[in-house]
Length: 311
Figure: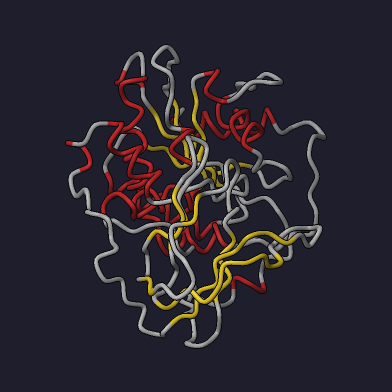
């Protein structure tokens, strides 16, 4: 029996119960159009909340009247559980004040107000590219991920570098890349996998490099990429990218479409049969899990020197 057949047999066994639900997913409408870039328009203000991630609010580096370049840090990480915020376009800081932020309660919080000039000028704001990441040590790569402001893009927005900063005593052999996207309506990960599969795979390989010294047996280090089986185009694209990478550590695995299969702990159990105990993290059972969009952002920050200013 092939590796894929064995894995699918395990999945059918795990999901043969009545666990989970199958809502109406209603994803087709947003899958009809290709991904396009939405560019900021001059004289339309961009409101950049400081609290865009879990952890400490970053410290403001700019003041009203300052000109900033696209990708330039406008707020610095405050402590370990924090990341910097970068300007998403070039232009002038017109205010630093409380504004409504994306929050269920409609809360106000401190925001940096940027008026774009329409030029999207990056100046010298790009970080230096790490073209050959395999020659870089894990601390250098984690620092780059933090410097780029990368957080978990699956919803938790937890600083990604912290997840990859594993204590030396904790063995990690498995990296899980989450492409399940089990929620109704949402299709951003599906479209990303269809269009940028090679960058997602490259990001996964960078994370495997960061974690390699934590694998008790590096020959058994693996990356499992879980994608719900209602995304055949994404599965095909990711499989093709994994094949092109010619990396035996990479395995693309379709998982049954059921909510909440995209939950970190649920996906880990589906892919490996192992359960993360209550009150524990995946690292406690030898695994790290990141979303597909986070993986792509890690690639772009490392190899292209690009901070997280879009998705």
